[in-house]
Image (tube, rainbow, N blue to C red; front, side, top):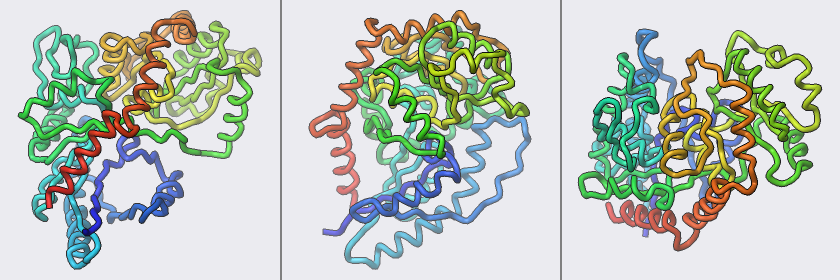
Length: 413
């Protein structure tokens, strides 16, 4: 029997590709050494992005950018398929496309291959981009138990510059795929997954949590941070990280610092500031670093944001405080707080470009709630963490779902 191979086409974005930037080039290359035969990385020729008006939405820019890469991706797939056709050992079973790469379903069809869409967010997000119905002031979104209030919808929904339209164009091609793979698990999104098991859509395969439990090393300073963390008592440190694109202006940095100081808890703060300010220390309250020395540390970690970070927190049984900034994070926050009861609410509808400042007292209160070792919410998160791990073990829901996906792929040709 021939070995089966898949061709993955990711979007070059942090939460989609999993590899933030060139600094991780060594890590991506290490994938080629994974057993049994490694992963072959194919570098595509650089394509100049289309000329678009600067006011166009990020979603429409991504859509145009991906379409520019259809010709080189088609050429790469042609070369791979041609090579495998002449091999007695391997065959290509299909293409796995990032959700933003759904226009490339046609490439798979051209070579008589099935395509599968990989959604890096959750199942409820699939409902937003594929079957969204608006009814002011609340909205019926498949995957959510209750109508969703307007104020937690992603900014793209309100964009007049092609934001939500780009989502719709992407989702329209899902029906032409052989299956939809989602980074989630049955127990945390049972209702949402049931909404799409109606025979009207391609089969949906929850395969998560897809995370790297060992983490990645980004700089030499990581060793210093890890040593500091190892010296702290178990479950005693608050970690603040707002994702690869999460940054704040000076007033919010100051209030956050004061809130952490007033809370009295140990903390690790991944601090990013908005340009042109480059020295974060100049934005902190005077004497702050001296007053928190020993119980607080500021670093420059890069972390996934949104759904990836939520899954990582659940995996380790660590509760979170919601402070969404961009993409679908407001929707994720609403789901975690209002529908699942697995997070502490500080904000559900904060936006990265907002002038609102979350005050120190609010931050202090939220930190106190999330650090309450005897809270019911912390207990629920810990239980969900155990369930998340069982889901990917033999006999677990995601393990079984992956088995069905493999059967689908192998049975195609």
